[in-house]
Image (tube, rainbow, N blue to C red; front, side):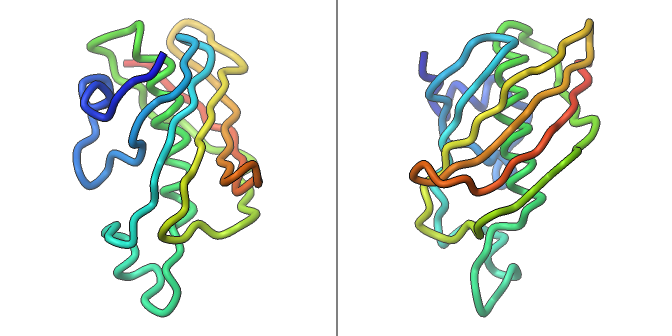
Length: 139
Protein backbone atom coordinates (compact mmCIF):
# COMPACT_ATOMS: atom_id res chain seq x y z
CA UNK A 1 0.00 0.00 0.00
CA UNK A 2 1.35 3.40 -0.96
CA UNK A 3 0.47 6.63 0.83
CA UNK A 4 0.84 9.82 -1.21
CA UNK A 5 2.13 13.13 0.13
CA UNK A 6 -1.42 14.55 0.25
CA UNK A 7 -2.58 11.54 2.30
CA UNK A 8 0.49 11.85 4.56
CA UNK A 9 -0.52 15.40 5.43
CA UNK A 10 -3.82 14.04 6.75
CA UNK A 11 -2.04 11.50 9.00
CA UNK A 12 0.90 13.57 10.29
CA UNK A 13 0.41 16.88 12.11
CA UNK A 14 3.49 18.40 10.45
CA UNK A 15 3.33 21.15 7.85
CA UNK A 16 5.86 22.74 5.54
CA UNK A 17 8.77 23.03 6.06
CA UNK A 18 8.84 20.28 8.66
CA UNK A 19 7.25 17.31 6.94
CA UNK A 20 10.32 15.28 5.96
CA UNK A 21 8.78 12.39 4.02
CA UNK A 22 7.50 12.57 0.44
CA UNK A 23 5.49 9.34 0.41
CA UNK A 24 5.11 5.97 2.09
CA UNK A 25 5.80 3.01 -0.18
CA UNK A 26 5.24 0.14 2.29
CA UNK A 27 3.20 -0.11 5.47
CA UNK A 28 2.17 -2.82 7.89
CA UNK A 29 -0.01 -0.96 10.40
CA UNK A 30 1.45 -0.71 13.91
CA UNK A 31 4.49 -2.74 12.78
CA UNK A 32 6.49 -1.19 9.94
CA UNK A 33 6.60 1.55 7.35
CA UNK A 34 9.00 2.59 4.60
CA UNK A 35 9.05 6.08 3.18
CA UNK A 36 10.85 8.03 0.50
CA UNK A 37 12.51 11.44 0.70
CA UNK A 38 13.94 13.11 -2.39
CA UNK A 39 16.44 15.62 -1.01
CA UNK A 40 16.39 18.91 -2.91
CA UNK A 41 19.03 21.61 -2.93
CA UNK A 42 16.22 24.04 -2.14
CA UNK A 43 15.63 22.57 1.34
CA UNK A 44 15.62 25.40 3.91
CA UNK A 45 18.27 23.82 6.15
CA UNK A 46 20.95 23.82 3.44
CA UNK A 47 21.19 27.62 3.75
CA UNK A 48 23.07 27.23 7.02
CA UNK A 49 24.15 23.58 7.21
CA UNK A 50 26.69 24.13 5.79
CA UNK A 51 26.97 27.02 3.30
CA UNK A 52 30.27 25.66 1.90
CA UNK A 53 29.08 22.02 1.74
CA UNK A 54 25.36 21.22 1.93
CA UNK A 55 24.69 18.32 4.35
CA UNK A 56 21.29 17.31 5.81
CA UNK A 57 21.46 17.66 9.61
CA UNK A 58 21.47 14.37 11.51
CA UNK A 59 18.67 15.53 13.79
CA UNK A 60 16.42 15.94 10.73
CA UNK A 61 17.35 12.45 9.57
CA UNK A 62 16.18 11.16 12.97
CA UNK A 63 12.99 13.21 12.62
CA UNK A 64 12.37 11.67 9.18
CA UNK A 65 12.67 8.16 10.70
CA UNK A 66 10.29 9.19 13.50
CA UNK A 67 7.75 10.54 10.99
CA UNK A 68 7.79 7.26 9.06
CA UNK A 69 7.30 5.35 12.33
CA UNK A 70 4.50 7.69 13.31
CA UNK A 71 2.69 6.88 10.06
CA UNK A 72 2.90 3.16 10.90
CA UNK A 73 1.26 3.91 14.26
CA UNK A 74 -1.25 6.55 13.20
CA UNK A 75 -2.67 5.05 10.00
CA UNK A 76 -5.02 2.89 12.09
CA UNK A 77 -5.29 5.43 14.94
CA UNK A 78 -6.73 8.55 13.27
CA UNK A 79 -6.94 11.67 15.37
CA UNK A 80 -4.12 10.60 17.68
CA UNK A 81 -0.66 12.10 17.92
CA UNK A 82 2.64 10.19 18.08
CA UNK A 83 5.10 12.18 20.19
CA UNK A 84 8.82 11.42 19.90
CA UNK A 85 9.82 10.20 23.36
CA UNK A 86 13.50 9.43 22.92
CA UNK A 87 16.38 8.56 20.66
CA UNK A 88 19.06 5.93 21.31
CA UNK A 89 22.02 4.59 19.39
CA UNK A 90 21.88 7.10 16.53
CA UNK A 91 24.74 6.46 14.13
CA UNK A 92 25.53 8.36 10.95
CA UNK A 93 27.59 6.58 8.30
CA UNK A 94 27.41 8.77 5.20
CA UNK A 95 26.40 12.41 4.65
CA UNK A 96 23.09 13.24 2.97
CA UNK A 97 23.39 15.82 0.20
CA UNK A 98 21.13 17.50 -2.34
CA UNK A 99 20.07 15.07 -5.05
CA UNK A 100 19.98 12.06 -2.72
CA UNK A 101 16.98 9.74 -2.87
CA UNK A 102 16.50 8.29 0.62
CA UNK A 103 14.63 5.17 1.69
CA UNK A 104 13.53 5.58 5.30
CA UNK A 105 12.40 2.53 7.27
CA UNK A 106 10.99 2.21 10.77
CA UNK A 107 10.04 -1.09 12.44
CA UNK A 108 8.26 -1.34 15.79
CA UNK A 109 10.11 -3.67 18.15
CA UNK A 110 7.88 -3.11 21.17
CA UNK A 111 4.38 -1.69 21.47
CA UNK A 112 2.70 -1.58 24.87
CA UNK A 113 -0.55 0.35 25.19
CA UNK A 114 0.38 3.95 24.30
CA UNK A 115 4.16 3.49 24.15
CA UNK A 116 6.26 2.19 21.30
CA UNK A 117 9.93 1.54 20.58
CA UNK A 118 11.18 1.25 17.00
CA UNK A 119 14.34 0.63 15.03
CA UNK A 120 14.88 2.95 12.13
CA UNK A 121 17.36 3.36 9.34
CA UNK A 122 17.99 5.29 6.17
CA UNK A 123 19.56 3.89 3.02
CA UNK A 124 20.56 5.43 -0.30
CA UNK A 125 20.83 3.01 -3.20
CA UNK A 126 21.19 0.10 -0.77
CA UNK A 127 23.98 1.87 1.16
CA UNK A 128 23.43 2.41 4.90
CA UNK A 129 23.28 6.12 5.76
CA UNK A 130 22.13 6.11 9.38
CA UNK A 131 20.51 3.94 12.07
CA UNK A 132 18.73 4.75 15.31
CA UNK A 133 16.19 3.63 17.87
CA UNK A 134 13.27 5.91 18.60
CA UNK A 135 10.49 5.74 21.16
CA UNK A 136 6.97 7.12 20.85
CA UNK A 137 4.10 8.03 23.12
CA UNK A 138 0.63 7.98 21.54
CA UNK A 139 -1.53 10.89 22.73
